[in-house]
Length: 539
Ligand code: ATP
Ligand code: MG
Image 1 (spheres, protein in one colour):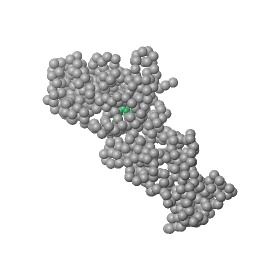
Image 2: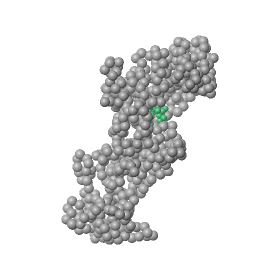
Image 3: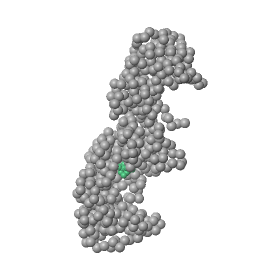
Image 4: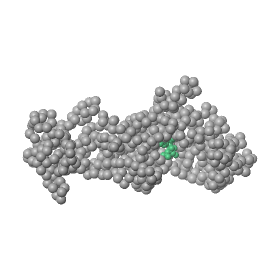
């Protein structure tokens, strides 16, 4: 059985109420898109338009000139296309004439009037959930007078905020949104597409249904906060006399654990330079997640797994991470990188000793293959893979102990150099006859560790990431009090030569470490950790 949106659509198609499904994704261009928007795109495009052979418009809801910017328009188009969306791009601002005409029509029908109410008065006269609102004297202003004043508003003869146009609905309505809401305001601002043409701008609740109607949208899908606005949506379409009016349906927005999901606040992080930009790999923006190494298919998979619900809830981060982990497990090449390098010298081979060994490209890919890796008498191992005081059950290298070097030999540790209690260099001998794949040494090594040849290794910076927010402690509600100072930790690592040649945005599994993606913006060799190998949130 499908989700409730699918049920509605299938019924409408069955009953012949609609011929072609038309949906829209209507971002306001006041920031970059985030993972919550991805959910909306997946629902409106893949889950609806594609599934039922209809179409999904990308429509910029650019009715508020103050916060909008062309950079955001471009980034949104780019991100939506990256997710796989195809369709037509529209701008709500292109419908300003129709909106204005509709407002005039409402005034003529005595369904709207010009008021001089201030925001404070508006608030005071609105009433409460239990008491009705109070009518203003201007509610009974003659139609001709409102028409004239609205024209003055449009023509720039009225100061910002001095007059508003209000719908004339019902001040006693139990739904506060229906108590003569403001539908137009005066605002002398420059619009990113319309320039200074307009001095009046429509309010969202008035503009949105008209935008949907003009485009022939059949199913206008939005988040639950708009449920109480639906009567107003329907009122505007009815009184505006739009044919084949669209219908609004609400679903639960995506909330992700420890994740900021508001463009306004994400903008703050960018403006106050807490992050390096909208595409900082820590950002839950589509641009940030792309740079981090998420793929369109992994985001779609995530949206599919979490489903579409009618009640708000919070999704665990591990659910998002398992989608990319599952995908990369099959698609990412394996490589060796040492994140905290410790030098290891093999003493039973001469200086200049050099060999190539083979490691599997990806044991979980449909096509198997092997890759050559340089090996010599000087390598780096992970400093955590050697211990002077091994805890119980330690399977890695200890003095006198043996481990297998992945794809190469078993080595036995013969000693190390120490300085102030810190291990500076480890010495080991190859166990003769123990080469991987042709081992006849009879020696058993408990552990297998990764390594990198010292001569051919590339120096790389590796960024390890954690959420931008610390877990909620029950006290600090404000995001600004929960910012995680360790959301990025950068390590000076060593990687096998291959890693220095990879193209930006290529992802690898660093054996035993996790999935990493080559950064697309930095100079030098920089890798970003996408996810660790195992779910780090499980305790
Ligand atoms: P923000 O507060 O981040 O700006 P918004 O809802 O104001 O979010 P819009 O640009 O108006 O942002 O959103 C475009 C579309 O994306 C809307 O239809 C909205 O319902 C949807 N959307 C936004 N956030 C989420 C979310 N967290 N989950 C699902 N859909 C979302
Ligand atoms: Mg918004």
